[in-house]
Image (cartoon, rainbow, N blue to C red; front, side, top):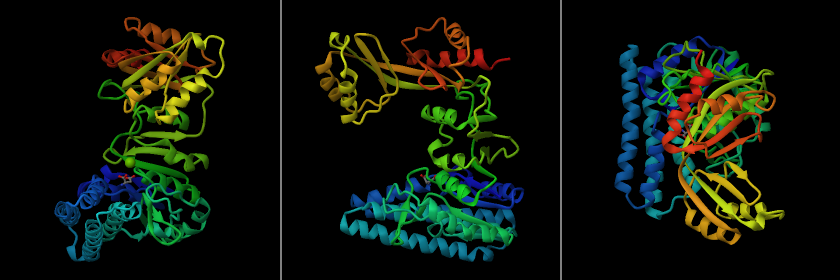
Length: 451
Ligand code: ASP
Ligand code: MG
């Protein structure tokens, strides 16, 4: 049995829904977890915030547009599938019901001028509550037996609204509903992203949480595979907008995928698939619009041989250097410096040190003035903007020879400001200036990926 998760872009319009149906038909028995239709969660949150700010009228307009986009999706589906619109009666009713619910919340928020995390969760879950029910109804109208399951009955969480933690133990029991349906030959369709707190209130798992839902369900039912369906064919050897001959990576280790995610591989956040990976369930990232493409498989396995998987980069990072003779032979210096970053909640990415100086990279600059001010106490502070992180991601770096040689050979004409290797076996990272990073990525990609 597989768990299939379809993200927002795959849920965008009637054509995509029909693609989903044909993908699912080839993959039964399976359980489906779906996101809201693309952009709907953002609209819901925006409506709630507008109501809080007193712009109730505009909030209601957004509610109206959410209603219209779902009604129109059903109309298009009926037309394209050639089914009878009467078959979708309960889907249309469901839209009316949820939009009325939304309007009541918006009214309440507008009246009180207050938006609590609890209310926001109720509102933001509406996208998945809509999409999952409508998709299940469309499956049935197309003659394929599906059943809608309310995720509140499956995903039990604590009451940390906005970022709730699911109870993984309870899932073993609650997912019984899903496996029963599958055994009866039906395809259960549930929304990702939300669950229920112990008192029955709706909670959400944090933005992008549908992958997490799918992964939890896969773990609980002991699925053979988890398939994350999106609008790209997996993770790429580099950003194809910069390196046109970048290709999809057939297989990647979970930790390598995590390295790539930091660099903005927006395909998925590895933390969200951890439960599936822990349970040794292979996770495949697949493209709804190119279903025959094998995509990328993410596994917990680590290959013995050295293998470069991708070239990744991140623009606009900032370097902070502190130079102080007090650092020489002293202890506690770095601890004190890092405490300042902690106080300002600024994550540090790379660190290099010499005997009398330390350089750190950060990718956010909010609070930079304050940071400089506080760090002055420890030495002379200098800041370099418009730097970029360029990184070779793979495995077994520490055992292999010649990689650094190839990296620096390929980048011979580019000044390298900072180097970091060795803290993990998974990457070699460099800092170069922003305006050289695209060339650098292309040069490295050519070095490691051209035949
Ligand atoms: N719809 C939710 C969001 O946009 C959850 C998800 O799509 O994963 O964050
Ligand atoms: Mg997503």
